[in-house]
Length: 86
Image (cartoon, rainbow, N blue to C red; front, side, top):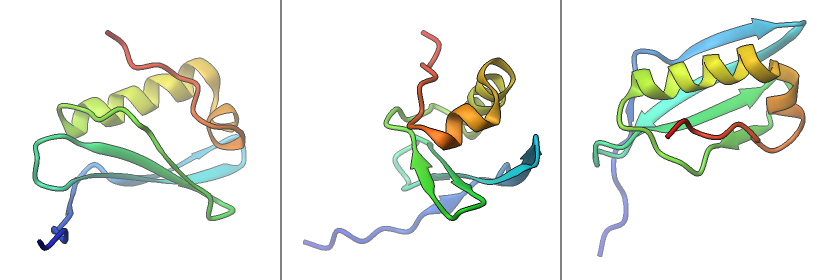
């Protein structure tokens, strides 16, 4: 069985700068219509959320809301603590 699949990157991937820190926002899908949110910080540490999103826009909106509420430092200095809205 071939477990390889091609990732589709969202056009919403971007760099976010806040409070002197920078993260690369990666949003992608493996073709199953669920989107994965990953950020890579300025130290090349990667954080991938366990939850998947129904859309790439939903993933980005979630991240922007978490940054506004908790600050970028709280997301990249520790494991993600922001919970997805229900």
